[in-house]
Amino acid sequence: MTETTKTHVILLSCGSFNPITKGHIQMFERARDYLHKTGRFIVIGGIVSPVHDSYGKQGLVSSRHRLTMCQLAVQSSDWIRVDPWECYQDTWQTTCSVLEHHRDLMKRVTGCILSNVNTPSMTPVIGQPQNESPQPIYQNRNISNKPTAARILGKMGESLSRICCVRPPMERFTFVDENANLGTVMRYEEIELRILLLCGSDLLESFCIPGLWNESDMEVIVGDFGIVVVPRDGTDTDRIMNHSSILRKYKNNILIVKDDVNHPMSVVSSTKSRLALQHGDGHVVDYLSQPVIDYILKSQLYINASG
Image (cartoon, rainbow, N blue to C red; front, side, top):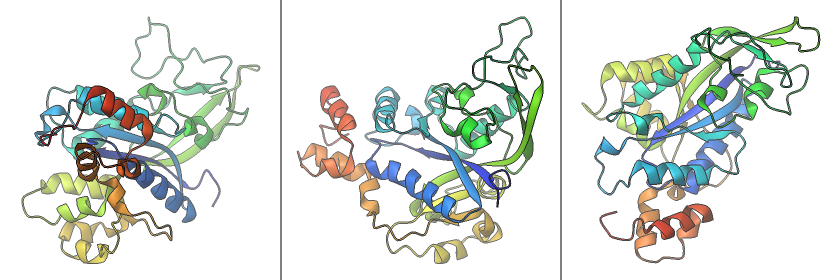
């Protein structure tokens, strides 16, 4: 398959990230590597979306701290970014609503003209008032004269608009590159892009618990979007999916990461990292990156057993 015929993917991970661990970042990396190896996908971005403070989980520290820790955890990544939208809402948002928010945000800027980096287009973005100075949707000095969608979105900026110039899942659309020198449209590129929910097998298993999830939300999450599962060691994902009619119905939308890399999924556990911090356990470095540890100690987080 050529680059333009492959499905381009943005991975979205929702959760408490209390705190964000090395394992959370490894899940992104493992998922991307696996999807690339299938030959069917190109992962062009990852989004970390921390949950709202009103989620009500015991020991959940303020979103102000969690957002900062997430930013520190991804600061060396050129493709994973932190999105604060959930935290900035008036109340807790469902996973389904977070996915739909990103889809709708992307839809609003679909059809914009992506210009040569040195001369941003003056064509207003869809939804942008005509009397305001238009802002370039994406600028990256490394983009070549013949950008592909992967190059356009591969190195995302900090603003959300730089992440989301795409259509809803499974739809096809056109990027237009306006040549700044000639002032004419030089290239159209049609790609397929999907937002996929990135999760562990524990979330997949939670779909099977009666009454825990709204069934209409599950239909949207698995049926309309799709999920990428990074399983814990020894987890029988086939058995889990057989216990849910919705998971069976949309099994082709569920991608299970299968690799030979030995990444113990225990390093994903925020609970274990908090316990290590409370007990002064030096193994906390196995769970958390040093910038996150430094921030936690400076802010005196998770010192007490209550969180």
